[in-house]
Length: 112
Length: 327
Image (cartoon, rainbow over all chains, first blue to last red; front, side):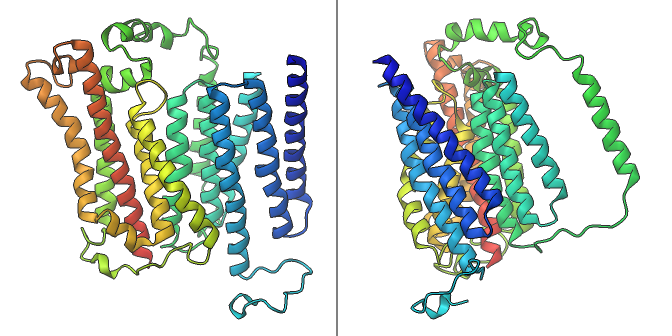
């Protein structure tokens, strides 16, 4: 049992680490703000959640696990919100996505 | 392993410090300052100073970043820089750095039990806290009771900082001649952002709950008045960002805020005066109850409450002083 739990948490932790690494490479390599933000959001949703769940598996049913679960819920609320706020602010500040046509039904006040 | 983490974090700290110095855009510099504080908090945590880490994360990375952003709204976004190199400044900084670097060779190793800092009063604190005060968190005992004078001084410094900012910038509805009604209604930084508004509103009650937990759980876990005050102020600043400056000023009127700033420090001081009236020294809480241990605990709870009220209201007043001025 303990062996399987260890294997599971090992998979989750290294998977999370991999996502953080991919996110980090993406921030450097991708061409414009929006695609980079996509990479950054990978870091603070998928990467962090997998790492936290991996630690939870290690901690078992305890107070520490509950705290980690609370942090996970908090991060799942704030991370995407922050990414959305950043994208929205960039859009309103008049920054175009690279090589993308604006959709024709976009409201007039959002048209760039 | 800890050393490896420490080296990693300290390297990042140096990199972000260089970034702050080199950044011409002040917005970038403010963001890097926030990152610097967060790295510092992680460093404190590695050194097992959870209370300090919590303060650094709440004040350094959280509230002061927002305060700096509020100040940025009042000034041009880029730094004016003179072309010529000031050799006197460079040489003084270099000399200081070399001296400090040289001084670290004399430092004891990290965590060395024979280090002077662990031989002076620390063993006494660790041995006597369960007997004299009977609370698990020795940091709170040191901060609230053994070093009560210092903490009172810190609260007065915070209060003075708040008074200074209010004198310089004014607070609509309390100081500076402007009325609360002058502040635009419902206009916020986030007025175009529906999702942050909804999520923020969802989170505010939990942030306030956490602030109260940190305030009243400070005797048992990391935390206390300073941290709780900063977290409470952060919740109300979030409210101001979401609902608008004027609504926030209506929720806690500036006059009340100014009174609260003084109330916290006064509560702290009057606990000291009360112990004097009961025949003991200033801030000697033992006399507050028939059982000296209970008296100590009561004293710490009261002064932590004073610290929390003062810190929260000062931070909030400083935020309002910046934010209500920009519009």
